[in-house]
Image (cartoon, rainbow, N blue to C red; front, top):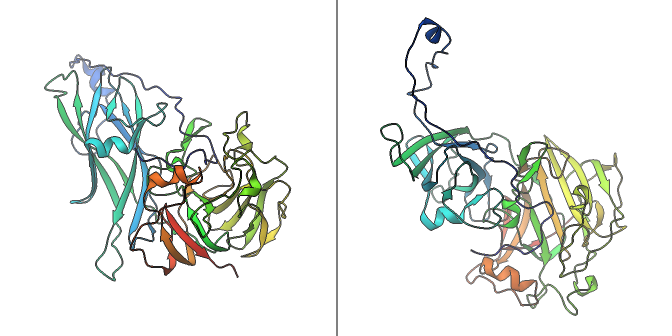
Length: 417
């Protein structure tokens, strides 16, 4: 398992609080006219009725976004629940658009992207009786050189399963379910300006790998929310590839601590929290209330159903108040280390509502930035916060990107104004 950026998570990590009811098979026979009259007719367009021991649904419709690899990504989650009172093994999960298969996960690859709700960071392909799991999907659409990739309008999912206690002919040992058809969202990712200025800004925790942000599902008010689906944790690399100089446990050892944070678009401030203390770098906070996970923060309405969230700001640095009308590039505060954080950084994400936790995370693209380099591997992120210089991926040529979203491990130069 490739390690995500340890501890730098703005909200509650994946937690489970549901247990599905185990299924049972029943025999029935036609008995009298009352039985026939109370049976609802099958929908004409529903197709043949088929048993599906694993229930499936999509957490929210995928929103296509162009990224720095020159492709379009559809990042979303498939929820699976074993309705049976027996173990069920996931053999494969395939994502299809019509007669095209866009993604197939099986074996270790499927385990890498799958977690049981409540089981933390344990890869798996087995669902125990009544267990529920999430499969994180990253469907990549590639086009011909110089062309715009053709994004499908609808996706469906083929889930192949193996039952530990088959009951043929109704439930054979192996089954393939055609489930969870979903329309691809037509929501356009907002085009925004960068929230930071200068070189060396590392996207240390975002889409589309199995980062802590992507795996953070918030169980709130009876539903799951993936507010951090596209969230970025920004730390700044110095010329020598490190993020701090001096004692690790002092905020002043991090040269970018206190950097200006800029509004990414025009729009009013919705909410503000300030006055929370700085955390000690290198230590994981505890005892936080729900509203304190984002630390000192600002939520801004940037239009068209998009809300920007700037989190973990420096204590006392917030310069705006609810109702203030911000302009693009305006300083809203300074980068800090408040809330649920173990190193100074800016947590930034866009969501479909004003609540940083109880909302759906949306993709966004930056109008323009320079892609300077990329970290070599996900495994470099943990040692980076222990003082090891970040190894860079060879062969990456610096280039200007327009109207694209960064991927985890990208290192960028931003120019504000």
